[in-house]
Image (cartoon, rainbow, N blue to C red):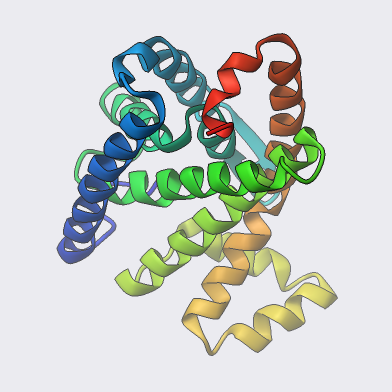
Length: 233
């Protein structure tokens, strides 16, 4: 879900940085109200950031393209509003060490993946009061990927660009009777087609991350429930 350097126009890059700075400042202020001294959460942020960093390096082959894990929903559930800081740091390290994404596009990528992580935390907090923790975590994680897909589609359509993987996927789907009719119906609406292709491409990721997050959060709740304190405020 990383957008590469040199793809987006300057105004989109600038907007991404403005949104990222605003959300970063708001998330830190919000975290102080929840935790008090946020410096006590630095070890937790480091561990979760490392998990996010490593997860993004593993690609999953989903013909005709490939995806990589994000775990933004899990990051959100474990860190609350500090998830945005964690994802920003993880993406910065990926850009510097492996040229995934880039520095100029870091603001946009952080917004696309970080904002849904906070949303996942908010959704999980409410759902976990009414239903099973694992189910709540799985749904919140899948929702995070879904919202990231919407934001990515908005960015691409607003920029007037498309990913090569979307073109490949579009050509691939034309060979499947049911899906080809959807592609044909949406071909006249740039946002609709881009959104549909991104959702279809990320659907396996929503399912996989939902399952992973459900198991991890359920396990953490049993063995180290204090890690979930941000969900009890």
